Image 1 (tube, rainbow, N blue to C red):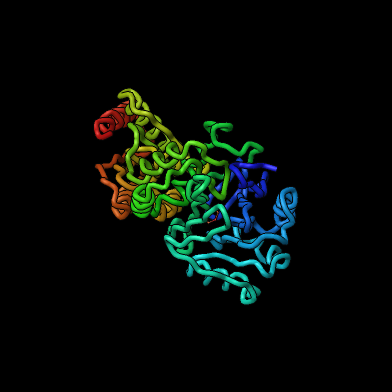
Image 2: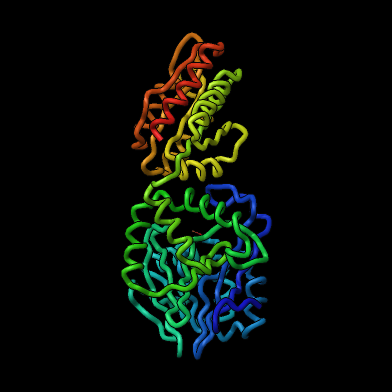
Length: 389
Ligand code: FEO
């Protein structure tokens, strides 16, 4: 039994072996966090993924008879949080499901049996009184689905934030300060891949919530661990969503006969000579979700490809498609690559970088294998780019 605050319990499930979720890799697994709030009335905030119903119900049974639950607060209808609802609602058909209007629509699409459920829709500012405790709802549309909302438990100062502020990490610890750096890494990756596309909405919503002066003491997301120092993750979200980054450059490339790889190495050396933090990824052997995490923390992205059939490598094209969907803000970029008898990759990459609204700098092309002098050109190219970060 894990009590996280007076009358509030974590009753979620741990998915130790999840290795892919939605659009990205989850090497550390994840958790599906459900929370039980005990008062004169009993509320369950979110459920778990289908297949984990028994684990959640066992945790609830350690505290109360699940049949006594009065409210199921469905903050988001995606299957990893609402998937257990059909099984749960068989036990508590009388319970009231609380959701935003958009969430109600998605519930009805996902679960045809939900027509028999008693669903109450709520909007920002609505409250439910449980007795001594009050649940206040705040809609957070497009963070990251149209249906999302967060719930504030006023008397305890706990913000149940659903996907926002989450991290995919499976651990027996339940608080960020118990885990440390891996949580920060996973939270960064989570923001980068799931939330960053909606950065402007993040900025507006954080401002709106700060203006409510709620006095948040704890943030309990639906994945990973709980933030006992809310300011830490709120400040990180402000920073990431503004596009502000350190003096760091991420270089991604693919290579045919190692010429573009050699260029990447020398460009990196040039940047490092100017004390710029650098990360270099071969797209063929790297985890693309990890790369996105580093890009969010970088001021500049360099993309390298050999010319193949007058264009870029398919791996590079695929990665740029992934990146275009995520739309990182306020980045500088440039393309580089080797070619044989005809150019094409650098031009094609540059066009894609322009479409992403990056500030695109002149690229660098080398014919066939870079010789000593051309490697020096790459090194100087890196040094020159260092002035831009
Ligand atoms: Fe949007 Fe964790 O589901």
